[in-house]
Length: 263
Image 1: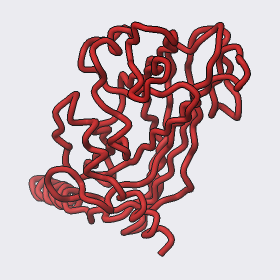
Image 2: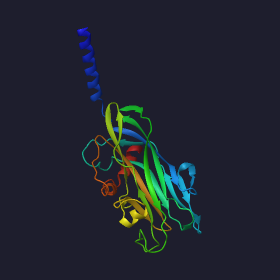
Image 3: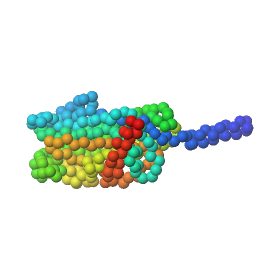
Image 4: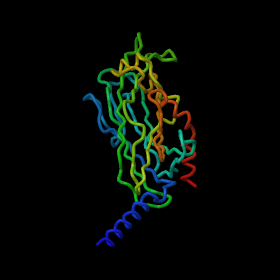
């Protein structure tokens, strides 16, 4: 019995050793699909297979809307094993959000949840696909009156900008693959769009000062593209201001990832 016990202990130690020394994944197949899963108030409509929210009574240019555009799939994404922010080439294209800001009357969107389904499969070394996970981005939205004083003034001296605030989402969604932890991180890949908003805009959205979001000019369409990285350690990024700057550090990286996929 003592001998058998030693054998079992040794076998267990070998199993743990094998688990802890599992081959790291250097590349992943990444698929992301976004849909609107919640919104308010009643009167806002969901169309286009869950990809478009529309609201308001048109004054001649159509309804206002928030539109999700999903990326091609799958995209091959390398794992970032270094320290600090991943350099260019370690980000996959994710969903793009477009706000079509139209002059309207009547009901306006106040809040919504963008749910992004993420599917990962080890590409190198090849492995099974992980069950899909979901990252939720909760937003608050303010359709501002087009008259002074403006909670979000337009730099182009157009009527007041509408306000979009991101409440949750982004950093360090953890996954366990073959006994190793990896961290999925979502970023805006256009740092000039997402930023820390003026206190007046945060107050109008019913959130505290220092909120992160963007504002949009009347009569224009504004895009907010997102990207994904996978890292072997947690990314240490102070909030809230630095999140808006990550897009600048990763600018152009989506192109490189697409080039890797086509190659």
